[in-house]
Length: 122
Figure 1 (cartoon, rainbow, N blue to C red):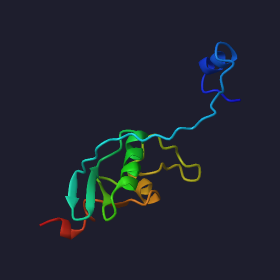
Figure 2: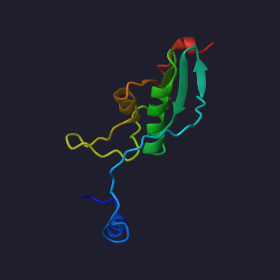
Figure 3: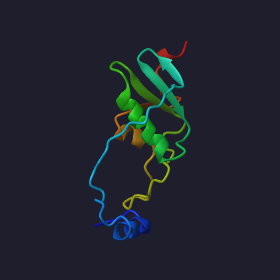
Figure 4: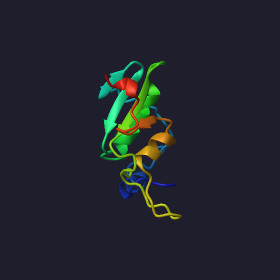
């Protein structure tokens, strides 16, 4: 049996010894509101210099999955080569996963300031 902490283990072996341990899984949803930086037709455009932490990047995966049919989350990265927060160095080349690689891996379209579609400007 694997405990998440010494406290959990102590409680299960003591005062909560008659209780079942980690036997249920309850899915839950955190309700929140997303306001994209920009909108153009079906595109919700998020401009990003960097992600502050992994939770912020996970938020955008949830948003992309929650969008209504016909809407698409798109990023414009200031620098698509910016490393992801907490990314480990790759053994084979010593580089870290970049924000551009993260977006591609998660099937999220992305651009840089130089590659933004011309139709998005006047």
